[in-house]
Length: 119
Image (cartoon, rainbow, N blue to C red; front, side, top):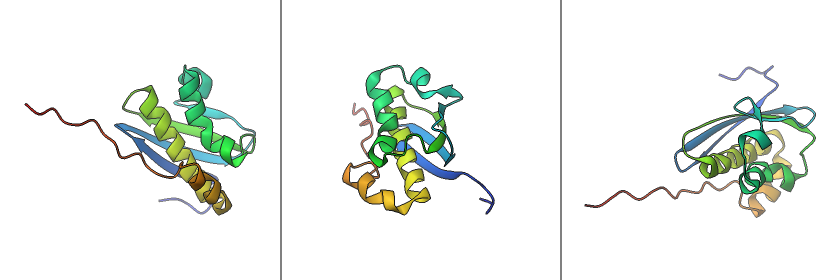
């Protein structure tokens, strides 16, 4: 249940077996993933870029504080989950962002999963 006074907007992202729960609120641009700065949590440039892509596309990097709880999967799947969750939260905060996010494919869940082994 979300209270009307809750300052956060929530978004959930999934990729492979990773699940990210993203909260955003108006702020100064702080970006924490599991309590660590995003650059410390995601160590490669590709995963850092993927996690921040929604903020770059909407040009809202310094406008919102982002808090992410992510679990499961590996670094690439987690970065994809964070990207989707952040895009959904931004769309919930400002519906005008939807066109830009959709144009870059950030609101579409990547449904590919690992194929089962066939013996």
